[in-house]
Each structure stands twice: as C-alpha cells, then as structure tokens.
Image (cartoon, rainbow, N blue to C red; front, side, top):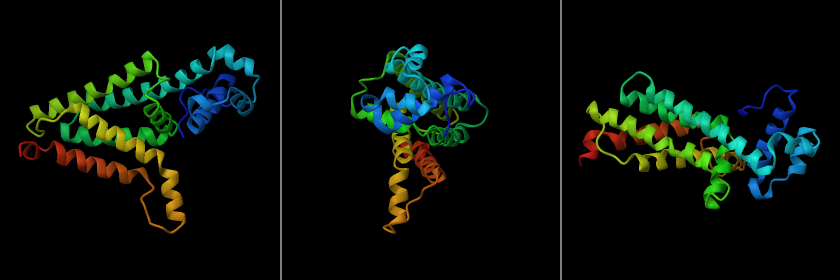
Length: 211
C-alpha cells in the first residue's frame, strides 16, 4: 500500500501518518481514535497534536496528499504525448493503479460519499474538482482527432471513478467469495482496467455517439 508523505521508517511524523492512514481507512473519520493512532505509531498523543493540531488536521493531510498525487498522475497522462485513444487507455490504467496502490483512499472517499462529504474541506473539494476538466481536455482532443463523439466528461468521470473505487474497496469481499468457493471473481486490478478501458472505448467511439 502506498503511503503518502510518511517519510522514513524512523521518522516520527511519518509513523503517525502511516498509523492514521490505517485507522481512517478502517474506521472512518468519526470512529477513528487518536489514542489508537498514537499506540500504533508508538508516540505520545501530544505529538500528534504538535504535528497536526487535531484529528481533523491529520485527516486532511492524508486526504490532500492522496488527491494531489492522483491529480498529478492523471495530469501527466493528459499532458503527455499520444493520440486521445491511447491517452484514454493510459488514463484509466493510471486511475485504477493509483486507487490500487493508495488503498486507503477508496474506503475514505466512499464513507465521505455516504456522509455527504461532511469532513471534506475546501482544499479536498478543490482537488476533486480538478479531475473533470482534465477528462474534458482529453475528450476535446479525441473530438478534434475525429475519434470521439460528444460525451459529457462529468458523467464519464463518475463512471470511471465510481467503478474504480468500488472495485478497489471490495477486494476483501471478492477474496472471501473465492475462498468460500461461491464464485471465482477477478481479484487483480488488471481486470478492472481492461473492462473500463473497453467501456470508455465503446462509449466514446464517434459512430457509437452519433447513433
């Protein structure tokens, strides 16, 4: 699991962030305990308040880092070379890979979705709002190249992001289903990438959009 800005293993601030990532992903903001974070990080609770002021500050630090990394990774795809069709495949692959390696982000964001985003601050919302325009630029390139038909970038964003987050967060359930012999669902994120790439390709095809 990728750990944003956690520093070296012996770094106190880094240990706090690492412990907090696990705590927030497991329990959500409201049920997360600063005492448990301190015990797991092997620090005095006062150090958490010294570095982050309060639980909300710690939560926002983790959330901002993960969202900023995601925006940067997807921006590099959109700003990179290649046709829109090639970039779209990379965009999907980068999105799925990011959520797979930042495994704390999907459960945190899904809880925020269920709670109406009560704990999202302005910076987190600002980072989230940077994503649809990136996708809009990619769709505009595809239309200019004659490869994509008109399609609402916000709707495509919800399809790609929602599916990626759901698949990343339900890996434990799929593993249990497989262990119980009830079915053989795909576990690896490559399966999610392939399906979403195919969905995007079919949805954005100019002849499909014109129908």
